[in-house]
Image (cartoon, rainbow, N blue to C red):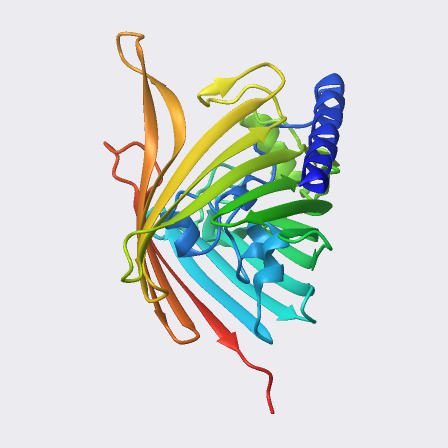
Length: 364
């Protein structure tokens, strides 16, 4: 327990150190690399991403690498595909985790979030004002992330730590691209039916180096249409720390149970539209609840993304994102489904998410 609190203090200290650094230099934009905040796994999405304390599968490489130590199979494989905004944006995930021995595990995660076939109309009108539709081409705007994870159980019972080295690649057709590097760190502590977790994303800040490649004609079009010419530069993603608490309770003696987890995302890029906000940081809570029967079936629900929305009469109300999900498990095969509202309920931007996990024994 003492070591857990020491590690907690260390993570918080790093968080505020880089928070002050980012605010002083004013070089870090809000929502940098935000595609890495969407989440992976329909089980987690059904719980409103409230899984940092309880995660214990291949998906832990994303949520909290310390959870990888709970894998007891030779290989754990995770797959997910989801689509947003009527199929315009596609999100794909592949995860692999291998148990080295009883105390250590390695993992790999790959994420792609992209919009394909975007029309490029910069050459539609020539210098004489003629419109030529054959000049329309298409391009892809895609974000990639590759996470290399390692986790290890410590000598203190119930305590584990883990970390990620991640590579981020973002590309907008032939116009712009960037490469970024960063580190994540996490810890989990189990005691009886309760679990506690801390996940520090971009713990040392993540740096994306952008390079732009615009031809002369495109630059002229940007100038004539009142757009600024982008220049090569460095984009910094400031740290985010997630504090999580989880509990599991049995409902009778027939295998029924319920679990709940509450997470608090603390961002360091200034004021966001969250319930708790200051000039230095913002806090975004989210809660997930699950009812299940043994390890066979689970029903999930969660709420997240609490935001203030201004009405026409200048009054404000709190809006939130509801989530529900269902999980099925047959031996070593897990199938999960989530139904989420990614925006205001009146807009009905609903998404269906399906993910699978497969546990494999060592080949003979």
